[in-house]
Figure 1: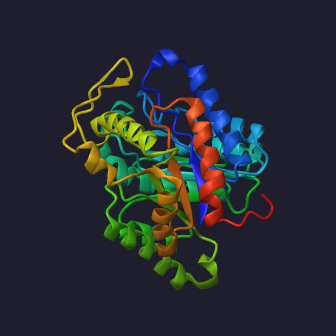
Figure 2: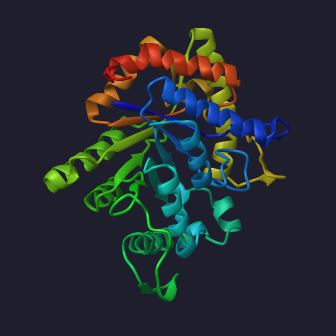
Length: 343
């Protein structure tokens, strides 16, 4: 099982400054490569101070300039808010400027507040995503593409430049339901998923759907991967774990607001609303613990067949604490799952 560090750019205090925020994310990307992570991932979110990155392809190019070999994953680009006729060219350019290290992760979007204000209401996002994905794939692989659909209607055109990765940059679909995972896998896509509430039965269904689809594909599916995203923090000790759990609980006060809640946002800052879930209940659903416990708990994911763990660890701690945590993961966790040869 491989490891990915999520450059999740949590921004609870805007006075910290966007320049410092993104400098921190670049430093974390460099640390991830130095500490033996296989990849880093970059969110796309606009208008809000959680998972803040309005230009993931631009940031992917910056990360590529500061690193040498880690894969750089958009996690995830929200297709319904883009025009595929221009976005396909941006993807091709990012593929070139990252020397083919880009993995384009895509989804329909998840936050009603954000999607509504960008003219892609969540009620329409599934249908628009499906058409957008089809258009994007054709634009990346074909010449003189013509399309007449519900959301796109255009005469023949060819995006320039062309991507350097054939037939198109590696792609990943973010989806949570088993049927969606199966369908995307059969189409040749890598998968990102998450059991948001930590439901072990859901996780088994998610990974199982991917593995069964790969088996049906034979050699055509042998290189496809499923990545699991979780809130993860490798704590120094029990007291540190409790402190980080409290930070995570505060993080979810904002996350819930825009994911399932009313979407109360002022001046770009998400209101931290009360939660019905207690801190102790949250502890059962995320991975904030010391290294020994983390190895045991991650072993369950590895045994299921998870190919890669995406560690979402920016929950409000300092940059110094993050660097120390990433080093603990490198020294005390990763060696249990990944060969150290060549690292």
